[in-house]
Length: 177
Image (cartoon, rainbow, N blue to C red; front, side):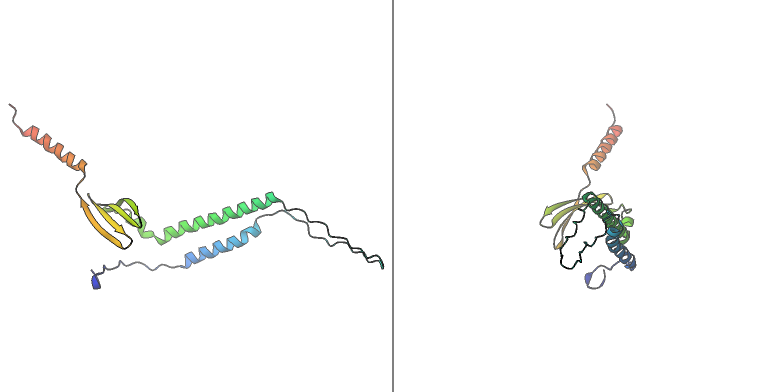
């Protein structure tokens, strides 16, 4: 135990946030650039209406209405942009998960201590079944932390095997009449 009853912290290597920053900037830039790069419907350039300049005949000719937008092209462009950005988000989350928790994958190889099951009880309370070697323990926890640890007896299957072995040993050592 460390000072003031606290457990000493394991030495961890400092993480560089540069890769995450680069990934974040790439995602933002892709979100801004991809909609511009994805092909859209070709719209004609607006034309100025002809103006008549005769001395006494000043008539206004309204401009022509622009072509209506191509809805199919807009939806395809929206769909492609959305898929690209969601793909970048999923890739970023996957990379961050692997980068931020490398110890979790190494700890999963340790079979001496593992979480078997968790039962949430509501209101931030839960019961955890933990396997410690060949033994199991129930752990109760709530929002303020660990509340109780109850070691469980060996499983019934283990007791049954021991009873069968004892019964087999007794039948082979008893003299027959």
